[in-house]
Image (cartoon, rainbow, N blue to C red; front, side):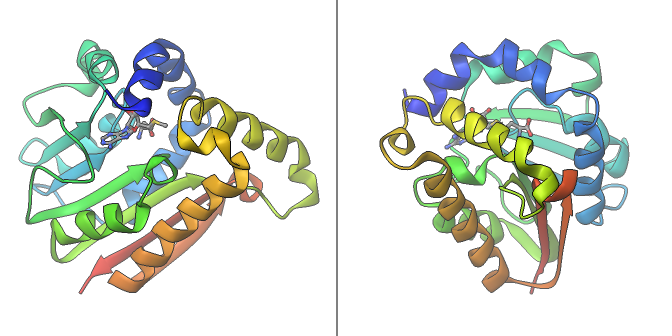
Length: 216
Ligand SMILES: C[S@@+](CC[C@H](N)C(=O)[O-])C[C@H]1O[C@@H](n2cnc3c(N)ncnc32)[C@H](O)[C@@H]1O
């Protein structure tokens, strides 16, 4: 069992409440919009957790489409499967390592609050880009420290979030926030190298960043 699995396995219930908090859903809607999905599309969420993105993804691909959630932690997937809005004929959950995507030639991939977890985020992003057909889109949503002075309390929350989520991982032996940010930066750089028609937007006073692009 990896550090991430044991951490998210223990905290699945708490995580699910945070992931479904009011306000977070607008970030999820903007991420789904950035994928430019059409009815009938197949979209894969890497590190889908408790399936908080699934309802909005389902809406975008419609009943003829498919939403595939990939996660390594059984307890997180169990929570997703318990929620009627996060299940259905068009929704499939796969327990697998997202660094080795179990499906290929899909229309879009997203990873929300996930890239900073991978020890080699650039390799993970490469694998995600390889799994998307030409013309499909990939989106990464991540927390980050905000440059806005008004966001100082959120930056403290960011440090707390990283400490909590890095608990038991190698990040906890480094400067938490900066190591986490280096990983997110590496993921974004690789997505930038691999895509065209990129869009970058920030939310929550700059505390959340969304980068998306099209596979050439
Ligand atoms: C912060 S949660 C994000 C969950 C979801 N994307 C969301 O927005 O609420 C990170 C998730 O990544 C999963 N994860 C971590 N490493 C993974 C890996 N190598 N492969 C698949 N999932 C992984 C964890 O189990 C956890 O569910």
